Image 1: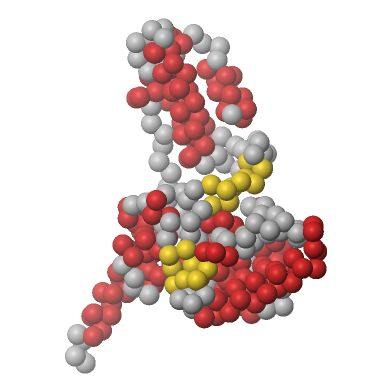
Image 2: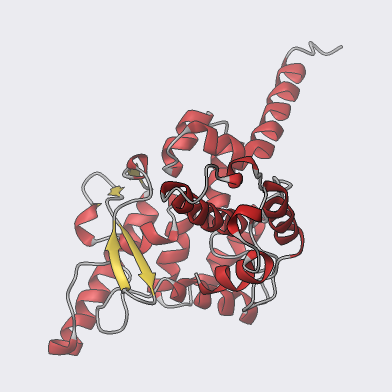
Length: 296
């Protein structure tokens, strides 16, 4: 909120509400989209952040309309520019094989986290929200039921999944289930060693004393791991995109991929991975052409 007001007030705060037009607001929003920078790291603002600024301005005008101070909200005619879709940076199969091999000498907790992220495609909040009762070792399945979130005001807290379809059950290979079993034994041993200092809350990924892991911890660890081992760092969220890419390249249809990723609608999957699906269709076409070539 503070950064929002620091941008909006200098641009529009000196004007009376009834003098601010849709053109004024559009000019501000367009400039913010093209030139706006994050005050902490200097990176360009995301489209989502620009939309947040427009919503903030719109809320002010909506209140003024509600109080009969104005008859119209000019924000209704303002549009946030659509960003150019950028191809997501993900690891190649060769890179992830090398990463998995190097992980064999790393702490089991992080080895499991990275490998599970690739095999599951779970969001970070879903990974950190996993509890041991969500693991069915008999049938090799894991169920996503909750997320683990963090805000400065609340700290770490448990929340619902992003969408209803995000609650899902997925089957895993024995490799992952064996890692989970080994990690469960290790965690129980650590809890016994620490004794009364251990805080039992059934979470898989925890701090040294059993408390839920901070959401930034996996990102920071993986970044240092890549730096130390001279791997390209694609951001830990790229592991989710890699999972989707593997499914699409394997010929899995969009409805199944959407369900696996926990997207609320299939359109989200198509928008996020349209380029990958297009490449898969080209390969399908080439395969059919080759199959019907009859040696001519």
